[in-house]
Image 1 (cartoon, rainbow, N blue to C red):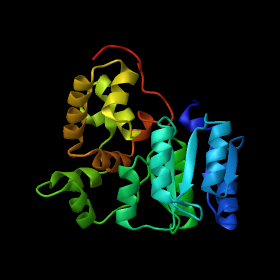
Image 2: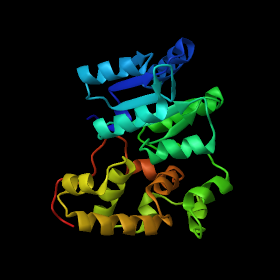
Image 3: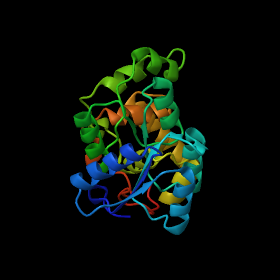
Image 4: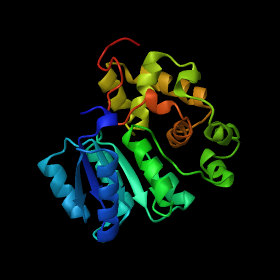
Amino acid sequence: MVHAARLAKVLLVDDHPLILSALKAMIEQMQPGVQVTALPSAAALREALQTDSEQDLVLLDLQLGDAQGFDLLSTLRSGYPQLPVVVISASDRAVDVLAAIDLGAMGYLPKRMSTEALADALKLVMEGGIFVPPLPLADLMAVSGPGSVSAPDAVYAGKLSVDDLGITPRQTDVLHLLLQGLPNKDIARRLGLSVETVKDHVQAVLRSLGVSSRTQAVLAVSRMGASKRRLRIGEPPPGEGEAAE
């Protein structure tokens, strides 16, 4: 798969022709030479992936006429675990944002953003960053669960980068794959580690982020302005496949 800063192939899925055309033009203007395949339905997406699953990014609208968006997102994450999926949606409800991230989306772009803000968010995503819109503190507390008060502070800190977390290179590898929505078993296989070792690394990463779940981890990393330097969508973590712990 190509370096995330130079995407070669993007699938854009939206059943609204005007939005589909506008987003396609915006992406092509940002990165001349990128191949953007505009698809109007879930059926068209499935057909495109059956023909060529080696895509660099899927931008997925949750409101498609022939599929329930969250079901489709879940199917994509299980059927194509290496394929980065970023949601684009007319909804900016916190419950939808959190549900998409929980299902493995690597970002969430509300269509209600201004054209300039949406362009900036798309640019960040295409450079390998993770964009999640700001969410009310109460919603983050609800996701954090009773008794967790550190997660919102970590998410909104904004001044940290992955480099500042104090985690080891191997834990950085684990964080990269965790952000892709991979379960511990797949992370272990990808990195040549035992599942127990991966569990230990995941817990260490969550502690370093000040969060208690994978969903919170994605939200926290999305707030780290420098995170895209180390964690790029579609780029395998350094040293992947090595047996070192």
